[in-house]
Amino acid sequence: MKKTKCFRKTTLTIIFFLLSLNVMLGQKEGRVSLKDSLDGAFDLSNYIIYAHGFIVVPTIITEPALGGIGIAAVPIFLKKHAPVIDENGKKRHINPDITGGIGMYTGNNSWLAGGFRSSTLIKPKILYRVMAAYGDLNLSFYENLPNGNDKEFKLNFKTSIFYTQWLKQFNNAKWSAGPQYLLLNSKISLPDFNAELPPSFMKPEDVNSLVSQLGGAVQFDGRDNIFTPDKGIRIQSDFFWSDNMIGSDYDGWRVNLSAIGYYHVAKNLVGGLRLEGKQAFGDTPFYLLPGINLRGVPAARYMGKTSLVTETEFRWDLYRRWSLMGFGGVASAFNDWDKAFAKPVVYNYGTGFRYLIARKFKLRMGVDVARGPEEWAYYIVFGSNWMR
Image 1 (tube, helix red, strand yellow):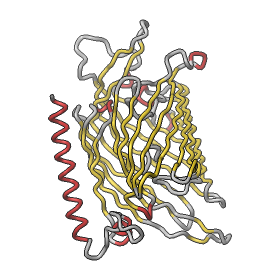
Image 2: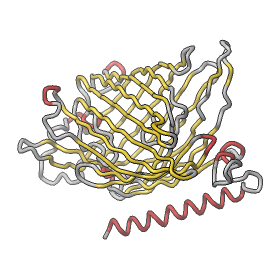
Image 3: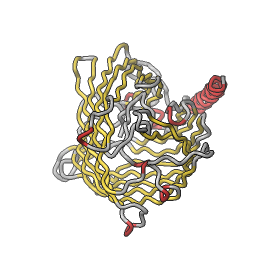
Image 4: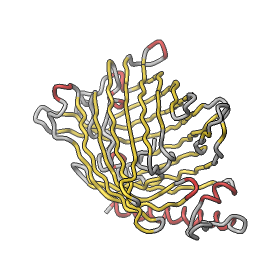
């Protein structure tokens, strides 16, 4: 009953945001058409390009680990860049600038506010990302018991986050490499502590901790666009290093490898494949251990020193701008390689739809409905669920 009331309030809030957006767009419509010149369909491309498009994206928070229901307002500015000709005479495509903020509140009283920017310094050929946020989050983590069952612990995180990444493009602009940095200041408490002991995975130093991690990344990005690709692959290998000498309370390493690819299986059918592996070494706080990121699987539900994830999806461009989605995947999180698949493999499957809302950006939006081992979940998708 409580979730139903919350859902109704959330729905009304979303309607309010959509009406506000329509009013805002309507004020611009006299000068900038919201209909595409090719097919006459509703399209935000010209509004974004010519009217300095500021879009407030009202989003339902559906992450089970955050209570399963909530609302977020994400104001986003998109700036499109024309391709440039480099000194070697080759054409170089420039990703759109993305600048935005986020404010969210969920059904389990979690909230977060922050801002982000992803852009390109065109002349020096540097891709950069920066984000900062503060949140008061209630998250569930699970302890593995000797009887094979998992015990849930609901933890409260008061967290400040700062992250930045700077990648220098090579002569072949699809390749880039550079440093990255993460700063995480967290205070953790157990709201439902009562008389029971804290979980075994939580160390005393985790209660009030500072994580300072310096790292680097190497990336190959051959996708035809960053929002909803139709073809191409993106491969990234990166690492983070923590040590007392850079102000961290932890000494350890994290190494990540990910690959996503898209291919036209048929004229109106695009297939995608995602592979991801993460490994933690040394002293790593429990909340930064590798976990399983799959639609339908709660965040922080399955974690270990190593995680392996694979997921495939298909997008069928059914009618004009409308598409149907189908996807499924398997994953495992574990502490020791000799026990990599000792537990049942985690799985997901689901379906959804997309609408091409900004043709000139190849930007699609829609909704996915997914099932994991325990429950169903739904997600509002901006661009791609694999957007990185």
